[in-house]
Image (cartoon, rainbow, N blue to C red; front, side, top):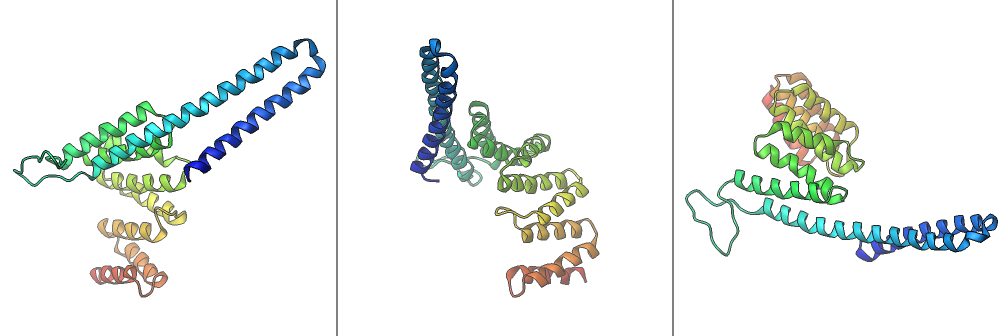
Amino acid sequence: MRAETRHQLKEDRFSTATIHAAEVTAHWSVEHKSTLTYGAIAVVVLAAIIGGSWYYFNQQDLKASMSFSQAIRTMDTPVRPANMPPQPDQPSFASSKERATEAHKQFQAIVDQYPHTRSAEFSRYFLGLTSVDLGDNASAEKDLNAVASSHNSDLSSLAKFALASVYLNTNRTNDAINIYKDLIAKPTATVSKTTAQVQLASTYQAANQPLEAKKIYQQLQKDNPNTQIAQLAASKLAELK
């Protein structure tokens, strides 16, 4: 959404709240004319508080977004080859663990400082991912579970998809299978039905359940003819023979 559109929406919500307060005060003044002045002052104060709150949250969103962008840049920073010294004009990390540690710290700061912003919600998702990189499956599960319950279906499905990997890492195959089935039943823009099917079939194959894997690969071929997905399914079916 463009900045001016967001600004207009905020102004519309502010106008609606202020008009509603004025209407309530007008009705009240019919029976309480002697205190009308106090009612008018109350409306002005209420409007100032509401306006100040929206300004505050707008500023919080802006600050959180800037911090989030920096954290994402940290995750994209390259890792230096072994024995290569850092270059002063080119940011880098000595290891993927060092990079994950720094990014995790930055995402945690966003969650702590701007807990009610959209950036904080996305940061919690990345906290889960960086915890996986650091081998902390317990923390990853905690954060990803929190995001999985988000009202944002696209973000929720991403968290569930990542959570399934955590379950596989901790030998909870059935839990991962249940997540993939749920994602297949309710696909989103971020995790398609096909993506979840491929992962479910791969999980069945790794768990020595070739018949279940075969069914899914055959379905993928049927639903996606003449595509790379169909080719992938064919090669996997060949492995299962």
